[in-house]
Image 1: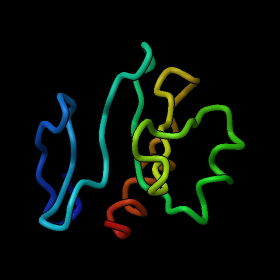
Image 2: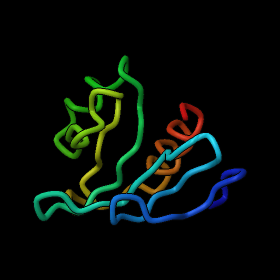
Image 3: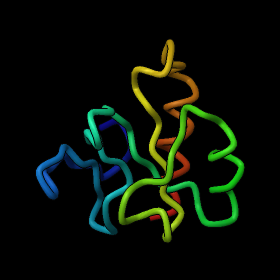
Image 4: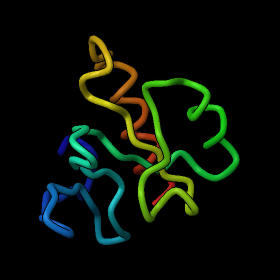
Amino acid sequence: MALPGTIEKISHGYPSFATKNGIYAVIEEYKGELSICVNVGREMEDIFLKDPRFYPTPYAAKHGWVSLKVHAGPLDWEEIAGLLEGSYRLR
């Protein structure tokens, strides 16, 4: 919510964070896995997917979205802040 113009809304049943230009982050549960979904761009997607904490975001991976498993270990909030800011800039 600290990023300019951000609103929280429900999209497809999940909390989403967006600006007037579109959604840049979603918190969702997929196959029992709670995740934070962000856009990293098609050119960076493969780098993130080499890390087992990430998986292709269902229905959005073709657009460069990846999902970070919340329970894959301790969360690095600086990393998450960077992911959110990067996704925000891509929207």
